[in-house]
Length: 452
Image 1 (cartoon, rainbow, N blue to C red):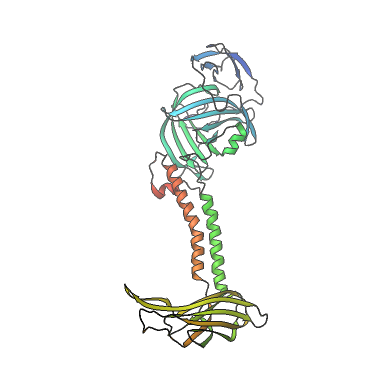
Image 2 (cartoon, one colour; image 1 turned 60 degrees about the vertical axis):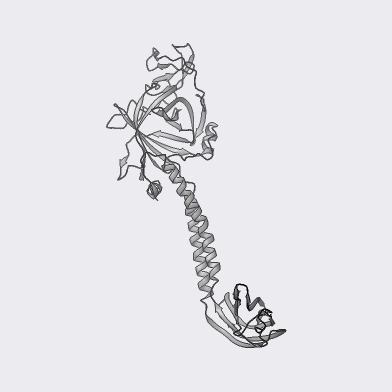
């Protein structure tokens, strides 16, 4: 995109259009077709919509610059189409098909508004951008240009763009085969493009349009998931990671606070020893008082049967508030077995069993226990009989938060963040693979991040 008013060492905007330019009608000297010039007085060349010939309309006598007799390309947005973009109505008056010396083609539509001037719609088939020519050159930072406080990273450098096809009217003398040197710089959502030839240098800032925006404006249906990503396309996973990280940190802070409120474990509240046998006799014992001083405390009840062998103890607990008779119940079983088989001696189970009661309010409690012992005989070892008596030691203590639950919560929080991080990494790698800079790895990932 060039401008007759732009000079090698300075930037000037195209001359502002008149408040309400008149539409000028003329006949194509090449084919005789009727042509309407929509920006009369400021349009320099027109490409005939019937035969493709390029006409000089800057002078009263229309002159044929280049004569073509080609089938006119069918445009995705026909010339003369009007659409509202960013609150302003634009009319499509020109079309360029360009490429990197025949490779990597893209299309540019010239938009016109009598009060706003010219803009560009640019597409490479995977998305659309809205371009505006700058009236000033950007500053230069350590790694590239800087515009309005934002740094732009180099993406395409030392390119050579050529015009492959032209249709409609333009504010400079455009011609098929016209070439300019190009450099493109990006930050998420924006591309800053430099074009230069022997006479002039121009800068254009392009803003990425989302699918709904270009569809509402001109009825275009862009692909919903372009791949590979566009050079200035923001990663859709970056905001998800940021929001998810904030939520995850808040949840972790809440869990840590909850753990502190519930208190640390290990403080004994009661210890008692109860007689037990393995004959299946059910017994009941009431132990207390047990005083819980902190609200919503975790209470641990541990049963230990030191001499248990080839048997199990069923324990039903009920922690009963003396004031309200509210009951908190749990079940546990201590069991221990041993035997011998073809592989040799074996053992199974544990003589200890701990259960926890969550969110016990502050108060004074009694612990009611219904328990029964049962024996088992290993007939392969006739002398390894179940014990017929013994004792079970009951210990009640203030418990810490369930570590397994805390670990599970951390895993559940981190798992989606890790997933989206790798999706983000894959997206950025695919985007940067389109660049000709050649950076790799995490350097590619973070050079595309916005300033904040």
